[in-house]
Image (cartoon, rainbow, N blue to C red):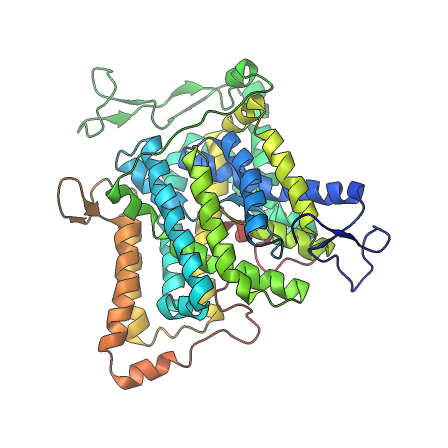
Length: 497
């Protein structure tokens, strides 16, 4: 099934206890309305993550629409999902930027990860999904997700928060309160609501309190003589200066309609290794999302897990080949389906077309790029921490035993390596002038390889203890849901209307 949707009943909202299947649709006006809900649900994360990675947010939104269409075609319309920008790559991209990587080199590293993800998906499709859990057991997957999230802590606090600490604090507080008090759809978009709140607060403060004096990253590192610092200058200080919180000059100059700027990738083995650990998180995430959709639609979608991972890899390659953001399936939109009981892929095609149209409005992209750093600070301290804690959620749901040294020792070492080396230009292992490892890349290698080596060397009783681990009967998928977007969408189990 691709485009041949059957009309559900009389085309109206399904009664309680019933649902609209993926190959069905409501009347077109109602389908467009559901599609609009999907656009709002995916919107906050889809433009936030490109901003955090230094990529074109407007292009990322447009490519998310194209990626969604490609995904639905590859999975033959059986797994309704929206493909938005992925949070899992943010840590690796930050590491590439810290090592001096250009936009093209960032895109090249992301494209390589997309190729690897597609090959993993093809392998899963051919040999079965169980191989994933053998190679990447929940103990390892949880550790990788945790180190990716917590490695980003200095970006949230030192880069964004310090640009406007009071707006950051207010935005963070709003997100926390909104996530607790709002229900249903509004609760799932609390991050987007926080962005709007912080944006409006910044404009109000510019009008009432005037400019703020703070540090802006990348524009104000100067030596004692006032010259711009070299990258490794020993006496450079970050100089605070007055500036408006929100600048609308670029918004006014941008045209209403036009193509976004396309950027081609260039490739570096070293930078690719910094980004590759995100593939582990994405394999687990896609599997978890397919399981969630299968449970809601009451269909056996296990045979589609390999296709879903393959499709995610293909769409990441397509998006990053032209300068867009890496993609992933979105839990926010799964939450919309849970609330509306409408699983029709027709609504996703509508959402995809809307995203493509938005990507063709440069003025809209300029408005996104004007989001103040303080607002992003308030968002990221919550978001990055929750990405890390989702790793702990995987451990908890799968009853990982940390009294067992097989789990405790190598995973502890990998996590500390990744977090301790965060924000540093100096790698922990340098093999040559052009090849080194540190942060997320080295931490992931230690966690994954170390766990398997420890398991091979451990005595029989320690190995036997691993057999008692596994998903709790109430926990759902073995793979769990390991993505920051789910945290943003639900802040827990909040998929109820």
